Image (cartoon, rainbow, N blue to C red; front, side, top):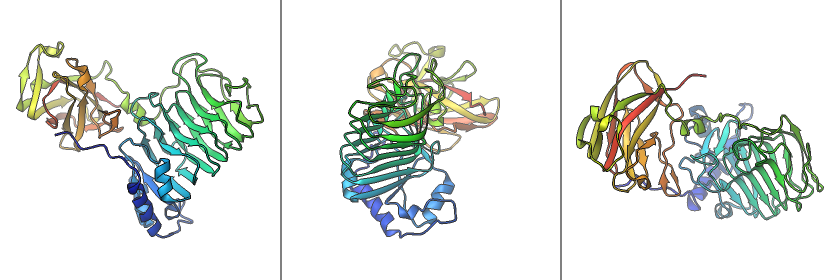
Length: 427
C-alpha cells in the first residue's frame, strides 16, 4: 500500500484554522518581544519551526496551522472564505512550496502577510532549485492593499509577481535565487518597495540572464527606498524600457543600492534546506554494501535487470526488512545516501530508520527502471506526482562504532545496492 496521500490545504481546512484563531481571543504580547499572535486571522508554522516559538503561540491561546507538505498556502478561494480583510503570520521556519504559487491573490481582499524576519521565515520554491514556475507571492488584479513583510522568498520563477494591481507594499523582504526575477511588475501602479534585498536572481552562471527587479512600460508611480541589489544575473536594475543603474524610469522611483556588478558565478547556496536537499556524497564518503545486512522477506540478487551493482550483488526487498549494521569511525551528524531503484518500472517507496529513530522514507521513481538512483531519506513531499522526500537538515546522528539501519518494505518490491554516509562539517 502506498504511503499516505498528499494533503491539499484548501477552503474548509484554512477556514477552520482561521475560526479557531478568531475564537482564541486577543491576548496581548506587549512587552514580551513576541508578535501578538492572537491578533492574526491565521498563524502558520513550518515543519522546522523552533519549539520555543510553538510554545509561545500556544501560550497565547492560538491553535496554529501547520504547513509542511509542499502545497501552496493560500489561493483566492481560501481568502474569499476568510473575509474581506485577512492577516497571516508565518512563524520562523522553512516553508516548502510545490510547483506553483505559494500565495496567490486576485486583489479582492485586503491581505497582510508577515514573517518573523528575512532569513528567519524562509519560503523555498520546492525540492529542486530554480524548477518552480510560479511565484512566492502573486498579486493579479484588484485595488485592495496587499502587504508582505519580514521574510525570504527563493527558488521561484518570480519571488513576487504583481500584475494589473496597485497598492502592493513590500517591506524587509529578501528575494534571492529566483529564476527570472526577484520582483516582476506588469502594469503595476502605486506600489512601494522599501528595505528589500535582491540577490542572486536570474539563471545560474555568467551572463545577462535574469533580474533582481523587472518592470514593464505599463508600470507607473511605483516608489521605494533602502533597497539593495547584489549579484543578480544582470547588473542593471530593470530590464524594460531602459537600463538604468540605480532607479527605474517610466514614472517609477524605486531606488536601489548596487553592491556589485554582474554575477560571474552565482553565490553558493546558504539555505540549509536547499543545501541538504542538493547534497551529494563526496570522495570521503563511506560506503556499505546492502548484501552485508540481514534480510527477512528479502534476498541477495545478482540478476541482469539492474545495471552493474557495486561489488556485483544487491538486495531485492519483497515485503520484509533489511537490517544493516555499520561500523562508523567517529560519532557525529551524517548525511545518509541510499542507492536503490526499480527493476520493474513502478515507483518505489519504503521506510528507513537509523538507530531506532524517526521513520523516514526512501523514494525511487519507476521511470528510471534498471538504473541505480541516489536517494536521501526524508519526510513526505510530492512534486508533479513524484515523491521527493524532504531531507532533515541536521542529518542523522551516528555513534562511534556500531549503528543499525533498518529498511522496511512500504510499497515494497524494491532493489537496494549500498548506502553512503558522509559527516556534516561544522561551520
